[in-house]
Length: 111
Length: 114
Image 1 (cartoon, rainbow over the protein chains, first blue to last red):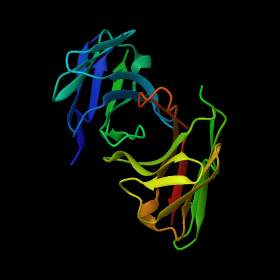
Image 2: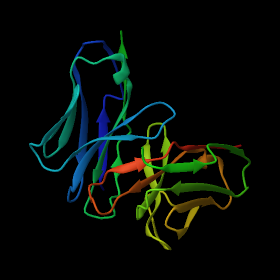
Image 3: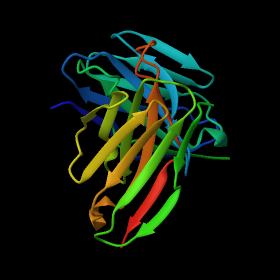
Image 4: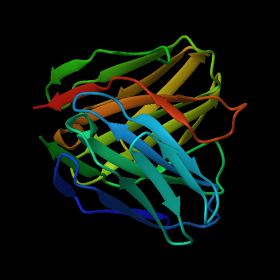
């Protein structure tokens, strides 16, 4: 069964304190791994797509990496506005862009 | 921002009553989805549509039905609501021409079944 597990469930950082979020997955025929950001009371917002092991994507203070078993979302020198829930998802070979999501990591960055 | 509107945004209902949630898009995207989000479970796919009148089940489809009579509208119906269907429901759309798995989500509909 395809599965996505994210850790930790919650993370509290001081402003400027870099850290990483983990997403481990088991999937038959990975077509892509996706990171989304979700603010309270809002729908998820797309951040990155990674397609193959070794691939990296960056956006401002965020950097996503991918291996054959897991992905990391590295947050460098975070700011309070980076506080959100970060969701990881995978797409298998079933088509139709259907995603399987992890439960997310709640990140709180304090000044 | 992608043009996705969900209605109602909040609804409180009683067990056994029917409920319909509506998703309306202005992007003309072919793929549409209904997900539910619960603490500890993340987002789980209920049903999806790959065209007008073309729908299929997701992983948690029991107790739900959908209809898509127009490209822009995707309806989710709970025929007889139960307390286990208390959740936040998200509609999403995807541009099939890009085939990237990038979904655009609505703001969500919070449903409480008493």
